Every structure is written in C-alpha cells, then in structure tokens.
Image (cartoon, rainbow, N blue to C red; front, top):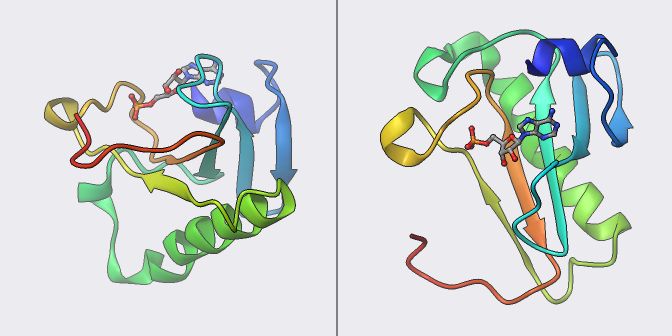
Length: 110
Ligand code: AMP
C-alpha cells in the first residue's frame, strides 16, 4: 500500500519527499496533525531492519523532527511512534513513523 503511495499510484497529501523518504498525511488522523514518514524502499516491519538501514531509519526520525518544526509543533511537543507487528497495532506492513501533534498526549499510550 505505501509503496503505491510512494509511486504516486494512490493519492496522498504529501508533506515532504526526497529520493529516500516520503511523508504524507494520515488518512485517519489521530491528532490535529498526523503524518506518516516512510522509506521508499519496502521494509515490512521494524523487525526487518538491518545494521545497514541505520542511516535510513535515522533519516525518518530526523525528517519527523524537521516537519514538526516546520508545522510549528516543536515547542509544544509532538509524538513519534513506530508500531511493530499486530500486537502493537501495526496494520500496514511497510515501516512508517507516525508523527502526531497539535494536542496533549497521554502516557502510557494505549
Ligand atoms: P499502523 O496501524 O501503525 O500500521 O498505521 C497505519 C496508518 O496508515 C493508520 O494510521 C492509517 O490511518 C494509515 N493509512 C492507511 N491507509 C492510508 C492511506 N491510503 N493514506 C494515508 N494513510 C493511510
């Protein structure tokens, strides 16, 4: 599914893209601002990342922080989440970093 978004076969509201990464708005937002940051390369779950993917995964986090700043959420705060496998709520099996902002967040998460 997210490979199709990366290839522009399925529409999405893209907030950032480069040759490695893509960020787009979540279709079912759980906060006033909710974006997903994905690598273009297909990796199913966080269990599948290798040492060689460290820069790519780091790039997802760096980009999330930059988008949060650009959207004006850096000061109030925001949450980033990777869900890994069904027990954690993963429903799309292409790794994605959730970026949620614009409201206060609870801890622990549900
Ligand atoms: P997860 O449950 O962590 O796997 O997150 C998957 C997320 O993808 C959910 O928040 C969905 O709302 C979102 N989602 C599913 N399909 C689309 C889509 N076509 N465009 C944007 N977001 C989507």
